[in-house]
Image (cartoon, rainbow, N blue to C red; front, top):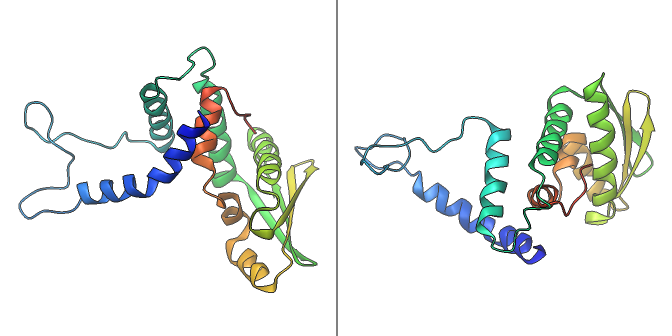
Length: 189
């Protein structure tokens, strides 16, 4: 399964280029998707990002003959995607400078607070040390605190530009993480 994850990460740029090429505007054609069996244009977008992410992972699992369906847990992936949505769209972040970096107090209420605790702690654990940055998460009654430091001044400038939400995206590891959650091989933050 790990070979599949790494192969997918390596293939993603070519898949993205193929998708861009497939959607290029051609004179005389509208922007709808490819033709279906009857020759009519068919829609290609699933209509909702969380649904699309789940659909993508299910397609990958179905394409892998080594998928162990007894360990697959798409509900766990959905819960993780809900956490991502809660943090990205509903969390409040208070940022302060600390020596060599920043302190982010990330808060919300109810389900958002719980999503923050899972996402921030999980990200700090998996991304700590990436790009020479140190990430530490702490508990907070309203969610979590993440302290990110970097030894080089140019990295601290990058930290300032990224902010909390940019830091949460570093590493392009998340798609592989989704596959691992769904296949039962990874933890849900």
